[in-house]
Length: 267
Image (tube, rainbow, N blue to C red; front, side, top):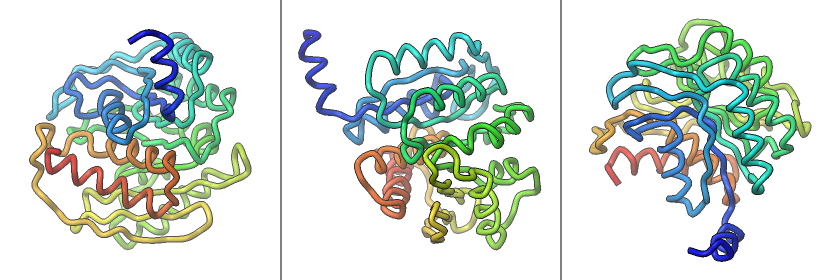
């Protein structure tokens, strides 16, 4: 395709940026995010924060990208094309958290089109973000984003406390929302606590406006080649797509949940 045609094609599409790790199995991280973007008719670009050696079952090794390289990659992308929305996943180090927070301050992307999936630990138990990185995530990143999508373990980690059961999730979501403050743009933080570890796997939404709602889920056996690996990435990137396509908060969460179901069904 000639360059003029490429530019014309991109002009018809929104552009979403994923900042996350590279998963060789493509079950999670930037490759999974880019697939979700494409499924929603959105052009995806990516900046890799870390290279991993992993499969759908375990993470063997993580090699972080230097802060300088990550920052240069982000500046290069935003200088070349208009980024409409950003999904942030695994960052790996406190330095990467700082680099991405600095990027968001400079880029001027509306925070309601920035979704943070606070990847802290793999389901296999491997640490994916050091404790200093979690502290910087809370102090520097939460005020810069419009949405955060922790699972039960990640919600507890952001607050520095034990994992809550179903009854404690609404209170945790309220306190995580308060950590976002007003931040850039003067609006608050929307929180979705994903309930994949609950039975049934219900998700909880607290909007920036204070509205609260449970989204019921049904436990199902995965028919995907990836099993349940990467479902958090799929949820957060699908949520970003739905917001970019004009959905309201509840509709976007429902659409993201449906995208996870399609993934589990092997579609």
